[in-house]
Length: 371
Ligand code: PEP
Ligand code: MN
Image 1 (cartoon, rainbow, N blue to C red):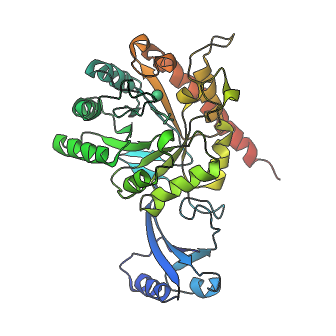
Image 2: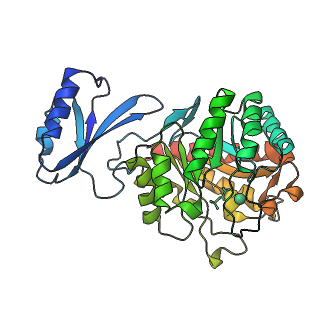
């Protein structure tokens, strides 16, 4: 059961405290408070877990600070959408808004290889008015003999350069909780020139201890990549580990499923699930066309498959695009085949805008239908 508190009710008020006290007195019911800082307003939701089937919805609705009570299924208690009117779990981080209605782009390096690549990338982003990026410092690789990422050694110049080029949010995968400490320490020492969104890689989608560690902090929002060989239900339950641990600022990223049926693409693009995630949950939805497609082969029109896949996700209402670029793709040490050359950044953004405008038009068309 979710008890939604009146948005105008401060947590210090007598009405709120009396409500909380009454809920805590319910036998065999665990009470969990969730304060959600949305993009427009903050919402307090109180979750009643356990033996709630005997609890009367009407009695709870009569408590002084309560706006509404929703009975929830066992599924995805915090991040799930239990009522079509429930607010989404959008948030603002370091001045950038992420929600189920808008669109941001994190174009950047799959793996950081040098200060020069980072600088060229960020300079181009600034020239195109973009304030988010991706920078892989800790790389989970299939072979232990492959380049493992520069790790802590590259954080100083990534964050310094982000400050220089006004980059506000960097999506960065962490594969161990010690990486969060390294990010903390570096940002602190440099005076927080930028922000980081912690990325959970597809290979760690069910690394429950890592999920708990990442969910245990609220300094950084989280970009969760769907597990490539597990069911959607299993991936959504994994995101619930993050929220259950305390962090509901989670973006769900579709990145293609591992399947030989996806060939010749690297993975089978699953972007038809953009509206599905929005319907089933309250998380903003990201697409990663680079790791879905894996190459830059072109259609007869001269448009490469990563552009095409991006358009498919954006026209379906995606809220974030995570995409690999490189100033010299041939020299990229990880995933060189899928890195879009930096000089195509302007073209790529223009192409995204066409798909986004088409999505807006589709939304307006749907609003004018009577049934
Ligand atoms: C990545 O985004 O760098 C990455 C490794 O992606 P995934 O975890 O989806 O394979
Ligand atoms: Mn990669």
